Length: 249
Ligand SMILES: C[S@@+](CC[C@H](N)C(=O)[O-])C[C@H]1O[C@@H](n2cnc3c(N)ncnc32)[C@H](O)[C@@H]1O
Image (cartoon, rainbow, N blue to C red; front, side, top):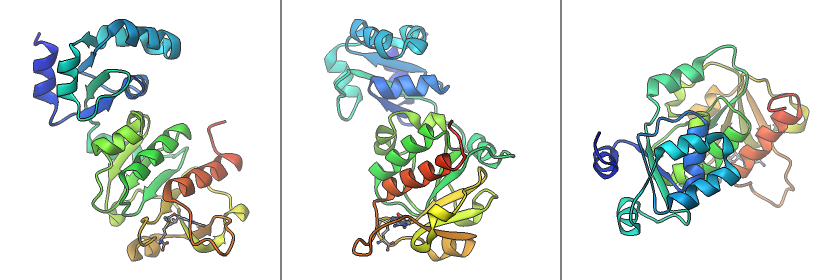
């Protein structure tokens, strides 16, 4: 078996960087394949696991190799306070497409139409994981597996299906697009098989997305305010879905 550093260097370009203890914990919990994981302090990392993640402590015990601080710093762009980093195998596009197309769908798919802010995308993936959404689809040029998005998502990309698609490739299902000009969401019941679409931070919903939408919904907002932040809009909408009968219960 090759040593962890050789393995790291061989895999770094094609794998998902899990930055910090919590990202590794989440990824393992949701079934990620983790070929290599390092820490500057194995004892401290396993103590943290004992305290916060007893369910995956033994797996982490088997995965984590202690490396000198200098080596760790050379492997990650920004050292994390927990001194833990790992590489995970990115799920294939085919696997994500299968998960997104599976019927009957028991929880919505979140669609971010041409998002621009990597932090927003990460926050939305974390929300989707928390609400057990089927997936997060982005249209446009942003890579939803960009390291900054993965960092923002705290390793929760593995808890939902994350893929970039064209508007014409979106999975089937009634599409509810969120827009300040829509009908009040408080009067709507969002079905479990819904696609919930949100516009770009800069310009809102694109023309092709609007054309595909079955319903336009607005979140309550006083008239003097132009719009909410993208991730908070997703949070309110998923909350509305859960509060009107959707999972998680
Ligand atoms: C920052 S906003 C976009 C603002 C953009 N300047 C515009 O012209 O729409 C990002 C997205 O969040 C959602 N959003 C924000 N505020 C909303 C509201 N009050 N009702 C429904 N959706 C909202 C929409 O999907 C919107 O496209």
